[in-house]
Length: 216
Image 1 (spheres, rainbow, N blue to C red):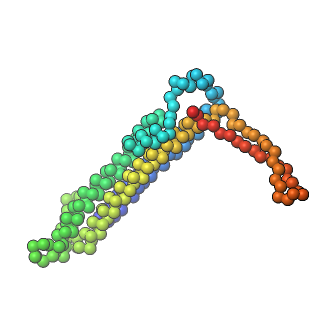
Image 2: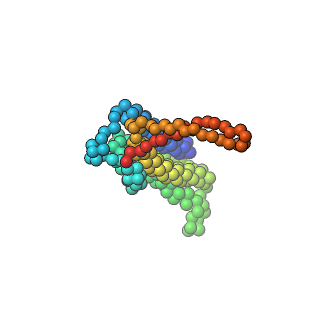
Image 3: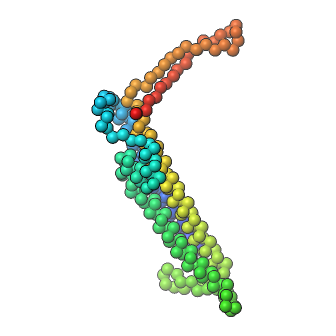
């Protein structure tokens, strides 16, 4: 029963974290696409009007997300992402605390199999279940439970780091997408080229060069 519960908690933690991050990134990509299409339709304002415009600097957004998760999203004016980031962090922190408490509880029970007062080691130990009942568990069973809760706690730490890293990547990528300007016409240059693999047989061709510009 305990092993199944441990696996179910681990699965719930993984699914909730994955869903929060996937939704955050998918909606970020859709928003960036809409912003880009909207920018193509609009005309770029004059340089004088851009002086007082709110500017997004990718480096600032990245550093803020490193310091405080979600701060970079606020800087990028995407406050709607905060609930998803908070949910991902909250779920992981909850499972870290839960698994750590249960791990230490069963670790203490497991220590009862090794008495230091010279008494005979018990063959089984009574464990209090969440519903208030007690069950007898042998040494090997308690050891598996201890290892399970410790593994889940460590994975929760790992998921927390992944969530933190994803928060940083999202802020950085979004900031770059918001500062990428497609309002100006993309410049295309066509240049003739001559390749000369053999002196007597020159090959004529054309080279296409696209120039992309970012906002400054």
